[in-house]
Amino acid sequence: MTRSEFRIEKILSREVLDSRANPTVQVDLYTASGFGRFSVPSGKSKGRLEAIELRDGDRQRYTGLGVQKAVENVNSILGPKILGMDSREQEKIDEILINLDGTDNKARLGANAILGVSIALARASADTAKSPLYRALAGGRKPILPLPLMNILNGGQHAGNDLSFQEFMVMPAGFRTLKDALRCGAEVYHALRVRLEAKYGKSATNVGDEGGFAPPISSVEEALGQINDAVEEAGYSPGQNVILGIDAAADSFYNDKDRTYAVDGREIDPDELLELYISLQEKFPLKSIEDPFHDEDFENFSRITKKLGAKLQIVGDDLFVTNIKRVAQGIRAKAANALLVKINQIGTLTETIEAVEMARKADYGLVLSHRSGETEDNSIADISVGLATGQIKAGAPARGERTSKYNRLLLIEEELGSSARFYGPEFLKSHN
Image (cartoon, rainbow, N blue to C red; front, side):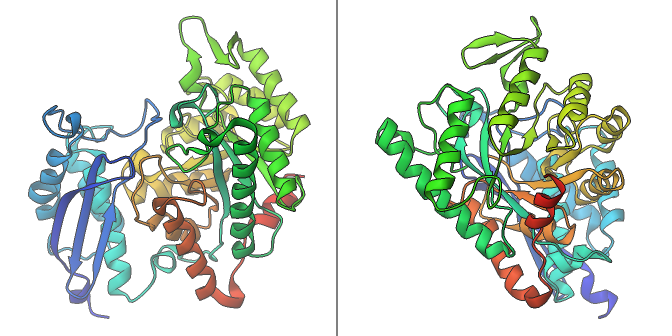
């Protein structure tokens, strides 16, 4: 194909709605013979060190959450600067976007504006090359279909109950195909619905931001017990077909003044919280713990990794915020052994890939993640396969903004055919 076909000819941004009825940035990018669109997700449980999402602050529109400023930054500043460039020059263009902002956290133009352009660029370049995005990103890597970490029971900031921990996940690892893994996850989800309604009433099956149920449970152990029983009632074997994961999101229940954590109605210190995690992994087939301590506690992240890291993955989300400086600090401290990857935490595709490759080189696990405020955009499915992360968080197998990612993965599996490789059995083998 000729260079002229990859020439960026038009960039247009607009304000659209996410899954929480809040506005977000959508960017269209046209080359001479291709098109890319990306709708930027938004988190509710944000790490303090994430790149800044620019909001208007005008209470007369969307209670101050409008993104007209970010949209205008795309249309009048970012877009015009890269018109005429070769859309295949992702790293060069991302660097231009970063320099146009000029801040460490993308606060001036907005990480939502910059990321919108960055991912729309990648999609347009792939479309121009008549390639799916995952193939365009793969380079020399062999695509891997990721193990889904399905958030089927919600607490913390994602629900209105008294559960301290934010996410309780099923990980259908014991299958040879993604298709069978997704079926298992959906069947466990329905079995859990039946259990919760029978025990707590119909209101218990109301769902949180990521599609998981939000029952009136206040005990972490009870929540895991309900899911474990649902796995069995769906006809599967806990620890074999299905393993469990949690996202504690410890920042959300940490008391900085007293240096304690509010869990199950009581205040506990870091030592007691560590003992709780040890107890939970002894009682349940728990193989993934995300953000077990607050985002500056590299010391206790190191302690839990040393204690449990050979048995399960300790995932850093707020600890790392997909930032290579933070990832490097964690590697030096031996804090965590897996990286949660959120593209909007850092703001460009290039910086995301840098964090992924740094973590991979250190033999960290990789989990490509959605956000609680999502859109029907399914780019992270392709990014996960193309970057061979091996794991993906996309929420419950319900609600269109979640199932769009899973359904895209099914199409990729179909397209890969006999060369398709599902990561689940590898994860299960390495964490037994």
